[in-house]
Amino acid sequence: MYKELIEDRIGKRRIATGVERDATLGMLNAALKTYPLIVLANLSANSYVIVRNDDFLDADFPESGKFDDMIDNGLDYVHDHYQRVFFGCFNRENLLERYERGQEEVYAEVYHRVRDGSYRWISITAIRLNDDDNDDIMHVCFCRELPEQTERPFGRK
Image (cartoon, rainbow, N blue to C red):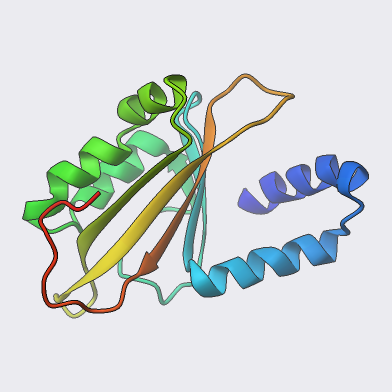
């Protein structure tokens, strides 16, 4: 499903930018090296698609589905001390409200459980997408692991 969404976006933008499909897909692959989990979401329609490197984290998220379900599932992987921050920043209703007020970006760092049961710091950056052809509120979310630090305040955002 995400491939069709990407192909559609590429097709609409190719005429305006002159950037070819292969170059755009190459940029996506480069982005995945820095951000191994990218979520494209239509918040108005409560839907998402994920583009990810399979070895990033241990979250068992379907490639696509309801955005609300993905956030609820994500809470299971976030350390108890950071669940309030994660949910407060990234639940759909709060994101819609923030974007409606003109906020363009939402950022948080949370402690996330991985395969071996340990926790790793990850950063999550959600950026509103502006689409002149559509009134839906959409965003792209970039996630990556942060270098280990011995001390972080709870719920940094």
